[in-house]
Image 1 (cartoon, rainbow, N blue to C red):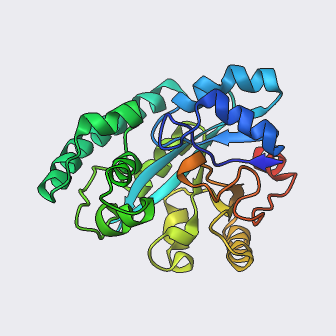
Image 2 (cartoon, rainbow, N blue to C red):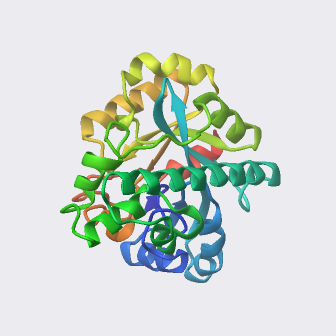
Length: 274
């Protein structure tokens, strides 16, 4: 079984890298992509456990980029040992912008009356603290009923607690991945604001060379549409559950939500073949 989209606690998942490998083995996943946000730390930390468990580990990363003012996520995949040094240095700059945003986010939430500090969030997220960690604190302190409410009411782009983070433009993110020899895949296209079909010529002109057709959020009709777009524009196809552990309890490694994720067994072979 294949799953090319998963997260560890090095970004916003709840499993440590070795724990994620254990979960993969339990789920029957033998080819796993770790795609933490703006970091390779999860991949690096899982390599020994994956080797011991016989799980083929694919190096990946998920980048937040901007397109017409909205966030669009990109998945980058690299064959070999985890991306060249220049790309990793660029990723470190993204991490610095994330922390600067978190300082402003903590201040904004305090202005809204929440007793939440940056230090509390960083105790959960460490170097890759993000909005999910602030959401967890809001739930624990009784400010909201659940993580979904935290995002809907305060943390999503249109919510009153949202603060802007400096993110690369979509074309820059694609370019950096491609220059590093990676595959640049449009993550969970169902979440892209606007008409994905209408945007495809522009995205492909920027260098996009893959699309995540298989995802836990996608219906069979969605998957069929994205497979057709891949065929139309000559894109490679990626797929994964977007597993986060306890943060998203309804999403399972390899199988998605209630078994809705059905990734073809030859997907990675076709990715490698180009």
